[in-house]
Image (tube, rainbow, N blue to C red; front, side, top):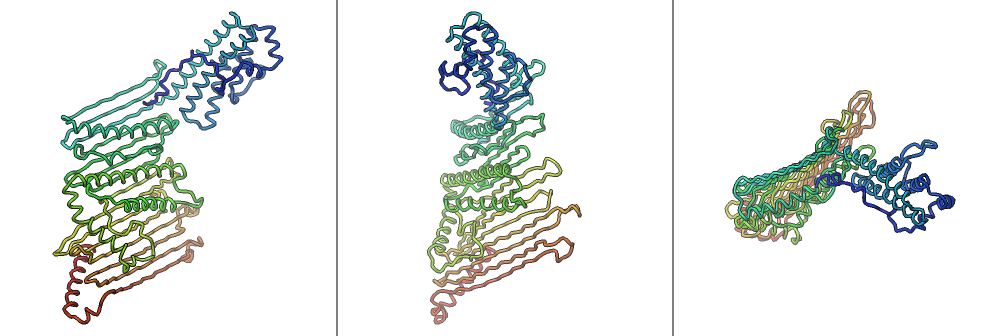
Length: 637
């Protein structure tokens, strides 16, 4: 599987009669490429010198670019000219930035074309009636010399490609629900043995089981191995196709979709590690990927940890999620969209004067690919929670009794009640209004780049998303409260002081009595902070260029008792900004911009006459209102 191309032998003795472009041809076409005066000379005299001249013309037609300086009147041998055709083709490939697989294809094609040159020369001589025993012997002897030269050259290439002691390793440990452990280890290495002058391959595979596997456990293990095997194929495929520079997983079809169908009834989790080591003579670090996924039946939690280190880049993410959850397509789409938005916010705010991301285009792509794996794992684990809840009757009952029913009541009020006016228009709620039916979770993703020297910076982006749900009960009142939070942060890990920080939160609390929604509290808040600096060579330190702080708050408290709609809304917006306009070391060096606004509104909709005319009705309303307020304040504040 690994380095199979480099290990394949080259058959130098298969005749090829096709030219370089691999197009069908006739002898007439070949003769048209030869100068007419040369044809006349060949018709009259074909000694070894003339046969060699015809052969060299065939070789010269294969040279795509000049492979080196030409010495005036220097006569190349058959071996030298054949090698020039190979070297010129390889140089052309390097100029085109071709990878190792493409260069190897060029090398194979060059060998075929060289054999084709001998076949074409023989065809031309035969068609002219000049192919005798002497000419055949000359061509056969020349071809053997060229074969030996090509064999040495290709062995040299093979040695150069593998003398860095490249290695590939894979370790997997799976644990069943009953406590049995399965360990699988694979490693492959390739290097150059100076004593023998040959490429040496190493291969190892071990399989160990601690315990006895049932048929069901064996089937579950097979399913996991299928998913892990696809990961391994993608991981090592990307490494092999990178042409001496490892590219982290994510540039191909690397994903964690198999987690959605993980058999939690038979297995409790697994740990897997992939590793490649390449080009150690150039000081390149190892490239590692570690993944851990486990389910805790007692706490009803599933946990995933992912870490990929590829050169100076590191992708790190974790997901802790409940095994209880429902299907909520709209909310999942909302979460994916807000994850994308927050990553883009940090990436955009990392731009400098040249308007490019702090990571650059190449690392931006790697970050996006790692983020795609993170989002895919998030969706797969959420799907797994839905499946677990359907299987586990206790979980389904617990979920149905609380959140699902309240979520429908809230959605009905927000969507269908004309008295509902929303939280406010200061900013959009990217987390989604209402109660999410998805399993609770805590997710974090980060992408960072380490500096290769003291002058380089170390940018890092972090994105976090969290959902926490609680159930409450007091007397005849029940309720669900939920907190949704997304945050993103960018900085340079102490290599310079610039930073960007943003946090958005949405809190919702409910009170339900007799399956009717009597209380709904919502708070939405956005905090943004950013500072940019510029290095001043005079002071030999970074000087503040801009500082920005903004806070937006919207709150709504609704009570719906006896069909009387009572709502208190409050919103505020605070912004402070200062920008440097001079460098004289005075407070006046900065331009300051400040803004603050605060709004409050109470809305009362309903038949108020019945409260004014009937003291008993009014007393009952006030008592019920106090009960709901106490319940909400106790559980959602």
